[in-house]
Image (tube, rainbow, N blue to C red; front, side, top):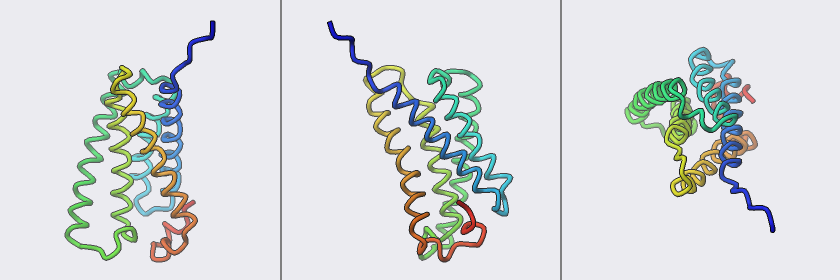
Amino acid sequence: MAPAAVPPGPALWRACNWLMGAFFALAAFVQINDPDAELWVVIYTIPSVLALLVGLNPLATGHFVWKTVSAIHILFCITWSVGLLYYLLLHKPKNIIHEEEARELFGLLIIISWMSLCYSFPKNSVGGRLHLVIAVVITLFPLISWAYIYINKEIQSSWPTHCKTAI
């Protein structure tokens, strides 16, 4: 009798969390030359640690401390995002990707998306498949975007010096 196949879901979910934890850690690291680095390092370090904890043990999302820290961080990021969005709507930039506030907003939206997904990840397999597909898409998006921007020097041409000297 052949051994039962192990569903790839749990391993893929853990891998996505490891990748997102690494992405958030790298995002925190590249903030070191930013004028407001202290704030952004903390903003990216929190989801990095939380995602790595989920990568180690997916059941961590059910722990009171994990849920509390992630909920507070999600609310903070939503509040900050609304402020940045209001600023961008007021100033109506010509090319949004060249605005530091827009890049900050995109980073916050990635944090909100990932942390919300982790917070609500179902323990059953019915809703888990859709969440897993969303997890893979969210995981690939910032990694591919970062690689594209890193390769495409034209996008970086109008950025401030502290953004150009990052990884």
